[in-house]
Amino acid sequence: MIESKAVIDSTGHDADVIRIISMRYPKMNIEVPGMASMDIWKGEGEVIMRSGKLFKGLYVAGMSTAEVFHSHRMGPILGGMILSGKKVAYEIIKDLSE
Image (cartoon, rainbow, N blue to C red; front, top):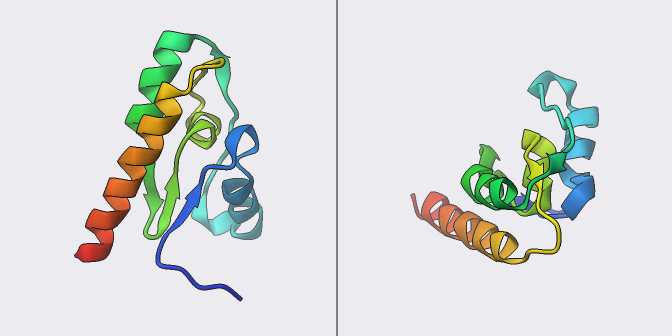
């Protein structure tokens, strides 16, 4: 077993970590509805805005965020991915320092 104070699902379109947790722990009521249609500009903002903590110690970033929150696909744009990861990193630093 590996223990961690923070886990980030940034596995991309599959959102593997969140999907496995949702199947193994149904009482957590986590759903992974999948992404919405392609809209680069909406998708960029949605992924950045919605990235963050789902539960204590469990965070989501990047395209995993789009899968979990049914956000728009973004296409081959990486700016949102970088900003999403940066946002989550700062949130974890803040949470772990409390």
